[in-house]
Amino acid sequence: MGKQGIDLNNLDKSHWKTYRFDEIAQNISERVDPNNTELTVYIGLEHIDSESLHIKRHGTPDDVNGTKLKFYKGDIIFGRRRAYQRKAGIATSDGFCSAHALVLRANPDVIDPELFPFFMHSDLFMNRAVDISVGSLSPTINWGALKHQEFLVPPIEIQSSFAKLLWAGNNQLAKNMELSTKANELIKSIIYELITLGKKSTLKPKIFSNIPFEDLVINEKGGIRRGPFGSALKKEYFVDKGIKVYEQSNVIRNDFVRGSYFIDEDKFEKLKAFEIKVGDILISCSGTVGKIAVVPSTIEKGIMNQALLRARLNEELILPEYFMYLFESEIMQLKLLQKTQGSAMKNLVALVEMKKIKFPVVDKETQKKIISIIEKQRWVCAEPIKQSKELQNTLINKVF
Image (cartoon, rainbow, N blue to C red; front, top):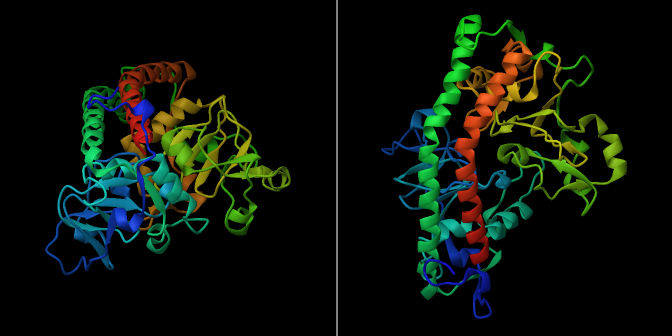
């Protein structure tokens, strides 16, 4: 039984109505010239966190050129490019945003504006958004297709109860995220100290060397490789069941179970150079650049798509988890940023540049010590947040 007296496990949806999306929400299409506006807040897709209602960062008009979209406080900014990233945040002020987003405003006659953000984050909506996206390298949703999609919506008279329940869960998630801040700061300080002090660090490594990325991978062709481009992996090659195609969303979420794209065995054999294996490092290298994950032991047979870069490390030199924590550090992310090009959409430059980035490598005993310290702190950070997110997602998907 929910806190508001609603039994989410036994919802009777027989009297709920179906609406087209353009009846549920309005598409706000006001245009803004960043060079001629009094607005000071710019939101790019890079400012919106995946699976979060809240937008915590923003840019300025000086960051961008070209016509953008105006939004108003309370509007939802939804990333229509690469919808699998599940980016839909609530605007906390007036401003303007990337044209790769849609600015959406709830129709209060159909859906409570307090409930609308949760509808946007439901599997029902997000999976539909992915399905109607067009394009292979950068799949994008068109309003013309989205507005005709139909969704089952609860009666307006009970929506406020759903909204109160879901916001209570979201508030608990926010508290857990605040509590994790100190643990995250400790993680940052460990890596910062190691990178800046080297052998003088309190960790007292026996070995300390700055080694280029290209020298940390196994000595074989494809030790560092990006996923297949263009005609090599098109939508028409996808099948209902077969060999999995891993994508950027798997890395961003560090979740290798989700995913709905497959290829057949014949296509896999042709693309076997792009297979991923246990212990491989995967890096997102288009759009949301710089997210990283270690391929887990539970991985199903599969290949990566073009938005990912694979590194197969020489584990005699460096452990995958240690490399991942280095890569995620602010200092290494800054180095990575210097190797990107583009404005709203950051893309890694040629691999030759990426391969030159140097990483501080210590003896494996110290690597294991660092991994242990960080994983303990990460558990302190992540476990309460994970539980809150799972509960919130469960509640959202029971409603919608």
